[in-house]
Image 1 (cartoon, helix red, strand yellow):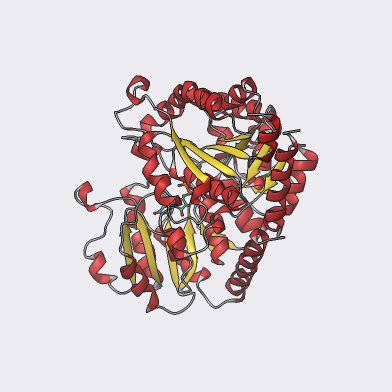
Image 2 (image 1 turned 90 degrees about the vertical axis):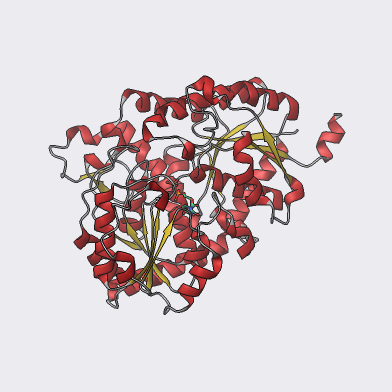
Length: 481
Ligand code: UDP
């Protein structure tokens, strides 16, 4: 192409999401957002992930600006079962390390695409650390997408530098995360670094290294939500970040929000009609994202706690009846809760449910997408972190933003051996509290509603996220020279 043609052709960004719903969903939204600004976008994935992505973009008004390209994922060569191209299709949690490791086999296909497409920039998931060197090879800037909050990024960097958990004398001792604004306190068993095995320690080091060499990070968040931490990240840690979220708000109507990840396991009429019969802010929505899998005994405690609260609930359980006997379900449970509780086995249309006015609280594992979706819907939280950076998110929600109550989860875990020590009483009490009429609950509701307004304002023309998006696009354009 001549330099004149390049100058007049639209910017082209290649998006390369890690193959797990919690990573793919926001990155596909990001591609849609850039497409709505006239940027040509290509989403790179493996063949079996195409249907998830296609469903998510097919109703987009800017679909003509979005392409999907595929590269092969040699699962069998990697030691994974045939067709295991998404983290959700690993047969058991023990396969998780292999799945992460094997994504490096995508390198060759990725580089072929770079030489073919030669985009202006690559936005690649943090787990694809090797994409930084590949991009350097082709002289293309690489942006990192972590998919988490700046609060969590700052907290984990402070934790890595100062290692305060090494000085804690017991598992229950609360210590302050050094240098992080806000005097945030945590225990050592809530910190992933305390448990990290060699593989993860090495992986996180590689992530930091590849981040240092990249152009900057795009963040699914907005300034009004965590401004102190955005300032800290840029001014103290000294890295470049553009907050351009909440990304899910790029979906403007029901149709566009319908397909996120899997196909819904429940008919729209069913959940909608059920919720329509409930009063505003009276129902708790319970979901632990796409990965966290509790033991049967923990699920039973949740079941009994929800029932004892006397409040209405929608509970998403990642188990199907096909799994055989439902050992987690108390005897006669569904009969007893009829009209009061709705159990969705499998995949729920989360964004649509949260936005129903009957939903008054969200019991969440604190995955960052779920937090943003709850904030966007103006729904306060009961926090139940499990893994990854979720305990940091709990601190942001409970201690900084004051829009949630903790259920009392104590221990971080990674895919296997999930802590199952939360008792029914804790579930019951937290549900009563957050849906109650007391001043504290009222304040949390008001604060979350205000944040919801700010989130929506951030993404409209001239809002903080919209301006950062424009600034990023302009900077990318200026690189063409
Ligand atoms: N999700 C959904 N239905 C479900 C479970 C999850 O739509 O039944 C979506 C949810 O709305 C969010 C994503 O999957 O966008 C989960 O991301 P999150 O960061 O909350 O948690 P993760 O699954 O990565 O642990």
